[in-house]
Image 1: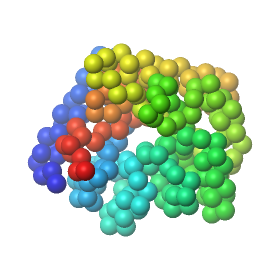
Image 2 (image 1 turned 90 degrees about the vertical axis):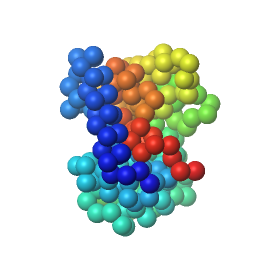
Image 3 (image 1 turned 135 degrees about the vertical axis):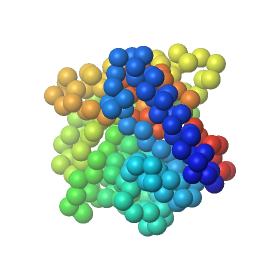
Image 4 (image 1 turned 120 degrees about the vertical axis):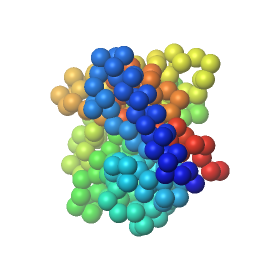
Length: 231
């Protein structure tokens, strides 16, 4: 597990990088939320975030996150990994936001579960903006139909959209083009449905600069804060 001192140094470096990217694009760093990704790290990683004044983290797996929720207080958890239908019951009401709603079927299940529990679940629609066969997500072409359906469920609050750029370390434009497509889609959906859809969760350790340049409001950072994940 990373030491508190090394985490502090990494956090300062990430924040400087975020600040520089915002300055270069005429944005305020206050517009961009840093979401530490604590997947595959023990609860100590969540505590490091909390002690540094960060009270919201991202997790990929439901059960791993729930275990951490039980041991660390005063921290909100976002689900950023693929959510299988059989895990939906455990996720609804536990996560501050489920960012990985990637199908109509999952959308309907989450709405039903939230309605049964008389709560409102915040969600993001995960869009495969890079048309990457290795990634989950709604296609750009089908997004309008899913948004229309999501807005009919009073038990769900759609905050915006999430995407993961295709892995292409040799060409940064791949990520930038993916993020531009999601921003354009968000703008089109906001106009069509008269909703702001303010959240654009896009960008990770390797492509946060490109994401910020294209309007990201949340970057999901794991390795740049904690080092390479435990396998």
